[in-house]
Figure 1 (spheres, rainbow, N blue to C red):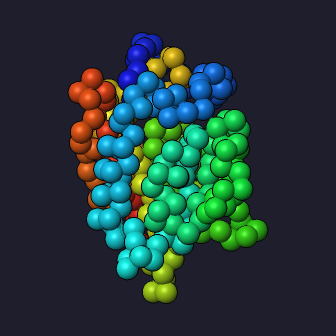
Figure 2 (spheres, rainbow, N blue to C red):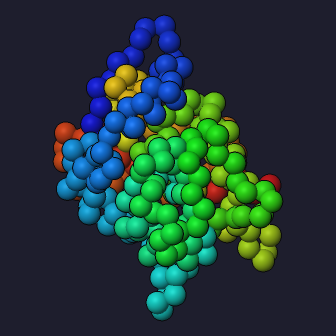
Length: 239
């Protein structure tokens, strides 16, 4: 979504991220679609349509009316706009990760909603005791609040939590859908303490985290004043 980049000379943009500043910003945002989308609520329908099409190309959706995803996770879920508008249509159960508890309050007890983790992505850990695995882990407009090192570690945890097929190969997907910097560098936004990364930065981080890009597309149909948005479907590199 729109941002006001302010990068300090001599500092890597991601080194300026402060989780406390990010959470103070979001705590002051209204728990509605307008708040989640920075005053552009009209892009939600276009966004969800593009995401649904992307998942369909991965073979994720409904087959003869049956949901093809057993369990999904939404990272940085906010009020559950994507969980309710997309993920519950393709998954039997959706767990959510969102540090701002007021955003997830309305999701409590809703059909199809599994566990709600009110922690930051940098703090989230899969439920090892329950051995929970996911056919889909969706991350959108949230990874800019993680430093490169935190993002690498988070993606590794996601990778380890993906479901495995009967053939022993990874079945689940990680999807990343984020704004793209076109300025030739990553951009720090002091308003919400986040970084807008370049495509090449994401690709470097994915590579380091042991992930390969299965499919990637640019979202179409957004207003031209917004950042370009790219979707990546990721899986662990098979040894």
